[in-house]
Structures are given as C-alpha cells and as structure tokens.
View (cartoon, rainbow, N blue to C red):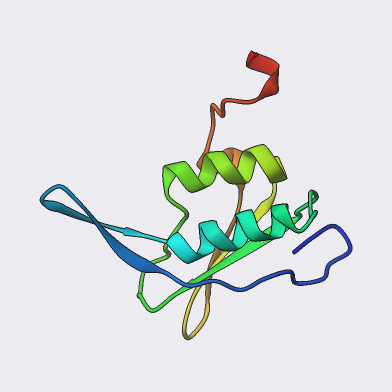
Amino acid sequence: MWGDGTVVYVGGRGVRTLGRRQHRIKPNAVLVLFKAISDGHRVFTRIAIVADTAAPTPPCGACRQILWEFGGNLEIQLANLHEETGTYMLKDLLPLPFDARLL
C-alpha cells in the first residue's frame, strides 16, 4: 500500500534454483515493488504476504533490505489462504538494516 492507503500492485511467489539448492522466493513480489517504484511511488506503509502454507511466510533477507530502503519501518502482514498469521514491523524482521545513515 502506498501512503494514502491505496493498494498499488499484486505479485506472486515462485521458486528459483541456485546451484543445487532451491530457494523459495517472491520474484514477482520484488518485480512488483520495483514496478511501483519505477511508476513513481515512493511512500509505502504496509505490505501483505499471503502464502499457501500453514506457517507464516516472511519476506526473504534481500526483500527485507529492499523494503527498508523504500518503506522504512513499514508494517508486514502475513497470512495463509485461511487466516492472518501475524503482523510485524520491518525493524523486528531486519534489526540492523543498511541504509543512508551508514553512507
């Protein structure tokens, strides 16, 4: 969502193979975030991640860093197909972000 509460874009999750290991990632979600940024959106207040899993599926480390850079301490809502499974602030998922204060 951007600052006025309007939903910007919706993405999906996929699987990427790296070497002999498979990693579940949200490539479409990252592309959606970059698409929103390229369309001029710069203020994000929350993101919802819904997965077809019993346990919450939080954003990966790279996604957390990207979200921090463009959203700061935004709200992350996690859910599966049946219920909301948790709400977190990004600072709790990424306690030591790299940002402009370190440059």
